[in-house]
Length: 265
Image 1 (cartoon, helix red, strand yellow):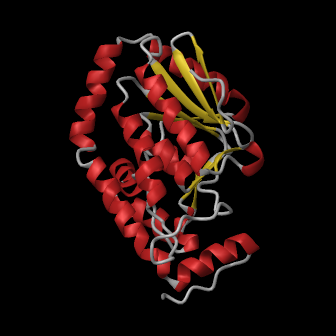
Image 2: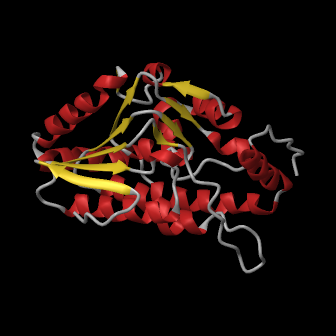
């Protein structure tokens, strides 16, 4: 795997391909460049016959704070913010590549996972988290909807009522409660997460790879049929928000670190 990435780190430890988000000073917030690197790394690990499991984690005190709102958005021909192009070209393909990978993909959530960080974790087969970690669907705070497959994967894991609560209220979900709700698979003390995640990945990498891939494919047909079409719908719906006063206010308030004043327009 390429050592030339700037925003992620990758290496293979035996049969485990480890991918680490590496923008710790920005809480591993997503930029288009980081997304492109992650997409390339997932594709490479997925195609690597020597890698029998993929582990995705992050450097520093956060898993990912979501999309970096400081990076200016592309514009549509009408001059409005384009809220769908990165989804269609970068972020949705990452989710789909993880689901199509013929090997297990594990997320080790070492701190806050917000926005697209939650989308990334939920795309994985198994999720383990540190005790101090929490999940936050921050989208509503800037007047947009969850994306990256989140409106598909979250209800599938925890049910409509709980998914609606998290999406519409934008409340923090601590790791312990996420485990109780069936959203994740395990919680470990912060200083033990890396070792536990590595051990889980190594255990999966020692399993019968073809059988694991078949299990994943069959369960995807049962649970995730229609995911590709769904992320397209998310991208289309997301663009609705580009011209709203609430979206402009939400982004401005976030940058100014104040509470937004939404008007419903």
